[in-house]
Length: 338
Image (tube, rainbow, N blue to C red; front, side, top):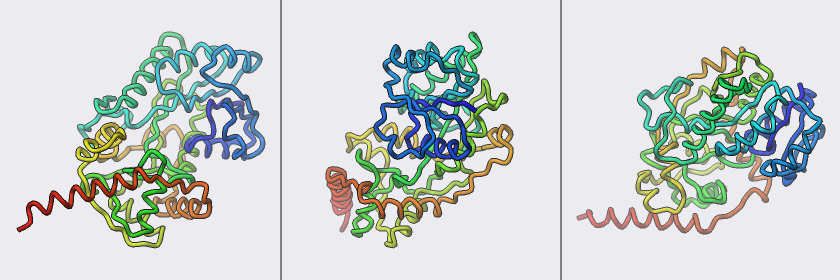
């Protein structure tokens, strides 16, 4: 198989890249080259900025592909450019959408690919919906061989998956746990969530590549395991070898008190219970099973981060904000104490 990835070094794409190279896929990566030193050998590197359409057209002038996948398209204009670049040059175009595009709030807790797409809380999700609509129009009217993939919360070795964290990543929450400081969990922590290890995601994704039955289809790729946010944070604390000191804060309050987009990432996503039905993926990719249990995957992630100081990026602003939120809650509670 001859494939082109636009991106190829992110949390989702890096695991797919590694697995494809192990399978001797003829893989081309188009990116700016900022993180290619982390890639295993064997990929054909095309250094360029996908937003420079003319330069990219020159790079791929003499190339055709079985599969092209854009991991970094977020707006319909990105897909309009991709259509101009790859129409007639690939047998399959895979777009990475998002499971956050599904109806929010849900009318039924279990999500299938037939669940309506609607998210009034998050512009990111609405843009992904618009991207899907554009591509499906090109499929119907121009025969553009589209497959849409909707990941949910996918994680790997470089960052601990969390609900509430700062702009610099997840390490500061882990550091608070290690220091026995209180850690914020949104809501009451009892809503269900699904996290998928990028190794498992890669298995499902590769099964869709070159799959004629996936053309014109939208498919989500997630684990079948659903856990509460309280369980998630307990798993992280256990992996760190500490006792969790949790403080529950409503998602609405967190959004009102932060410059982060918690309206989108919490109210439009993580504050809601989500359970995915993966029947469609399993029909398209017989034998697919997510095999990495969350406690096992998080333990691997924590061990990797603890062994790599460069991944332990502190976030003093987020740390201070957590203390402010918790102090405000304590002060409010004290006004009602007799």
